[in-house]
Length: 462
Length: 136
Image (cartoon, rainbow over the protein chains, first blue to last red):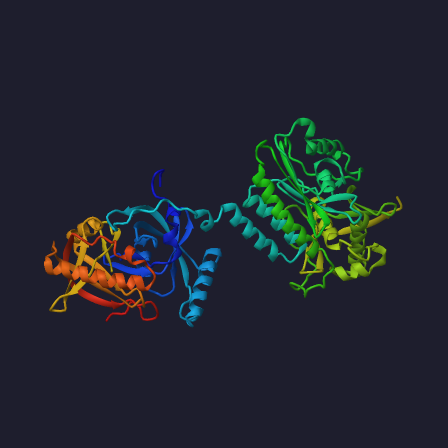
């Protein structure tokens, strides 16, 4: 539909179900059919939906011949509009179906007919053209809609609503982090993002999840007050840097440093922060909930004008959701029942034959190397070492968060131990450095150690 | 009252009719259409004659659908016009009963009308609910 033509949004008064619309269809043998429909639902600027409650002629006709014609009346003046339609598809689940179904059930329950009025499907039609029917009423056509913005939800707002729903459904911290980064990319256009969590003393932030980078960077650290991320954490305010001048490219600076150390990562116990070559635009948003700083969400782009106030606002809303979710899911929780019967299995083996992995534990700084490369240190290092020894000595592969908490050698603090986030960090480092040895979540508070090949352990003093 | 037809490509069309009168033989009906809003409908009727007519009472949604074939299209005579005007008055009262202001309901342009005589082939229940679509 070109400019000057009536847009579906202009017909907002007709789409409120105040006056039934007419819908005519035609069977394959050419017999016309016409019926009243209680409401035409707006889907998007080129689609409408019609409820399918009873098996009827309309339902059959559009599956034989998808064309249809609807006539709607503006309840203010009874101006008429004709819509040429083409049946596109039918939905029996999903957000559109759910909202139509709920509305129908509410009306049905008012009338005491809940079982009778049951939505079978939402039939979605493409709007081929809209015609204002001239000569229908003596009344003048009302001016174009005064308040369509209240009726047609902005796309970003709708996506934020859906994103909030998805985040609320995450039951595990790892799922929450992955879901948020994936949906920020797919729905809202943030293709390169990282989430960092604060350590217990709020001195450092470590990368717990990233999206859109060749290396996941899990475990890389940023000091409080250091660069964009650290400064945002200190100020507890979101900050956007657009069209970044070279001197301000924090990510590049960090990456250059990382590149300098990359070749020596094997001996240098430092992980590079994920960074986009030529990043020209960044936003960092603090993750704060109930006054507690839990981390930072940072995004970047090579397009200097990629981020505008829209992006600040969206990220701040998502950050608030995320912070609350991280705080809640990171707490000590009772483990759930095992999600699936656990097997100690040499599973998912594809590619080259299984190799022997040599893990070495350095007692001086609780650091674990795998095949001579730095893997992880401190509490997650001790956790890994404990798991690997239990696996070797006792053949165990099933573990619970609870037993780790009770293990005094691990030295977890009694409150706010961040165990779940440490396990995620450990899991991601292993994905990066030894993907054939995996920690697989088995519901809340449980996980399995899976190994595709043999493991050898050794220890050194320092 | 709404009227459905289709063209040679099976593209459906719909329009509003301003009244219906049942023939003495009870096998025909006459509906009243205005040329301005029903050009495509009239063209379709003249080309293939096939028509569906749905009558519904706004206050309780009691409805039926007639299927038929065109017999003739002719200018409305005095008797037709009187019938259509009476129908409009009664229908406006129905609309007022569901909350449409009288001035709005009465502003519909129902003339000059064409009288369209239809041979009825089938009648179906169309009141929403189970059993809708059944032949009478």
